[in-house]
Amino acid sequence: MEYDGTRYHGSQYQTNAPTVQGEVECSLLKLTGEAHRVSMASRTDAGVHARGQVASFRTNKTLPLKAWVSALNHHLPKDISSTAAYEVEMGFDVRRHAVRREYRYCIMNRPAPPALCRGFCDFVRWPLDVDAMNEACQVLVGRHDFAPFASVADGRSTHRRVFEAGVSGRGDLVVFDMAADSFLPHQVRNTVGGLVKVGLGKTKCDDFRSMAASGKPGVVGPTAPARGLCLMSVKYRDFPPSQTETEE
Image (cartoon, rainbow, N blue to C red; front, side, top):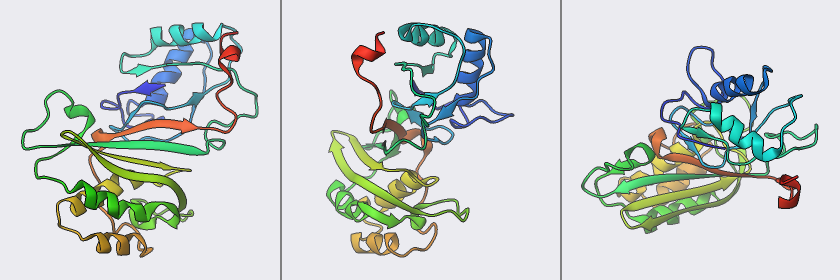
C-alpha cells in the first residue's frame, strides 16, 4: 500500500489522532463487517509517506484478490491506496519476516522554495556538497551500533545492519537512499540532518564518522522534517508469491 502521510500522526494506531492503521481498520470494518487488527511491516512517524508499505490482517470474508484491492480502495480516503493483495500462510508475520526496508529522503536544494512538491521534500536554499555527503554516509554501511542516530533510548539493542546508503544529485533534488534490516526511531531523519551539516560545510566528514562510531546516543542530527521521508519498499525472502498465484 502507499499513502501520503501529511495529515496522519504516523502509521500506528492511536486512540485520539488519525493514523494510517486506524483508517485501514475502519475501511476493513465497512468492507467485511469484521473488526480487524492490522499489522504493518514498518512503523512510519507522523508526516512520513510510504510508497511500499506492507500490511496484513486475518478475515473470514472471501473475495478474489483483485476485488480486495478495489473494494478496500472504495472505502479508504484518497491519500491511502491499496496497490496489491495476496493470500499468505497463517504463520506469516509481516513485520518479523521482513529482511530489508528501504527509505528515501528528498531535499529541494535551490534558492527558491518548492511549490509543487513542498509536502514531499525538505528545502535547503544553500548549495549542498553532494560528494561530501555521499562520502560521509559510507561509514553507515555494515552492522553497527546506531545509537548516535536514535532519538529514543528504550533499553533495546541499537545495533542494525545497513545494506546500502548513498546521496545523489538529481537536478535541484538531493536524494538520500538507505536500506537496512530495520531502523531505530528517527534514524533516517537524524542521519539526513547530520549529512546536511556535512553538505553545508558545518561538519567535516571525519567528524561525522567519529560521531557515527562514538556509541553516544543521539549525537547526530538535527532531526530532518518528516515530509521529506518515504518508505519505498519492504522485502521478504518468500513474498510476494508469483504473479500466477496472485491472479487466482
